[in-house]
Image (cartoon, rainbow, N blue to C red; front, side, top):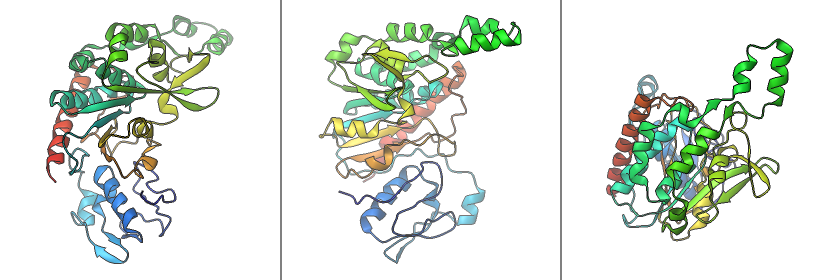
Length: 354
């Protein structure tokens, strides 16, 4: 078991690494690790997501320079468009988990990645997701991965959400009446279109019988804790709750609890996937934000990196997605699908380099 470090890998997106064994280091400084195991874990992290790949690193005082380019040149030049997977010596046939983080319309990128993995026959044994990633995961578990791209190419904003009529007319009311309407409104959007889309896209009987294990996460609004659902317990309500961003969509009652978006308590359900199947050999965490984009940290990633049994790969977009979560633009989502496919193919090629 890798040694747990204090607040190590603090943020997926900030170029700061604190080990608890040395001083916090920043851009332009040499990073020193006193423990070889922590050094190895940092290398895994760096290869996957970190701008720290441009920094020299030492272990126990002995130099292990990994300087790719001169630091000054690297800081001035744009980052190369390279997908986040690293080479791996894990058997290609090792059982694999696919963890999807969601992000509204950005889910098109994840769909492109997932489609390639399934087409290439990768042994995906488990899929986990929150928010839009939950819908993608459910599509894969129901045996409809081949329809993922078609879904994301055709989906429109009106099929996902519409403004509630009282809010639409509230703008024409006197000020005090507008405040009254807003005070009585549970959410900005009507969830009916999304519910219809989910119901039409999934076969829950096939999900229950699927050989691919499904995990969907939502957040208990009252207890402020994560809820996990699987093939047997997932429903339309659960998937609605997993995507219910507070303020945008109303909470959904499931088994007496008011649930909202699973991304509130953890962007990517990494730890849940690892705990669900001890036979996994690889876990691919697909993020919907490129390293240069400011996205929320997957809160379980730090703990997941302490698991030595599973080769964990963090796949981030090789280029900024340049699409806001609520902008279901057909051309932009087609571009994201293509980028996801390209990054997935690059990921597979990287695994072949042992």
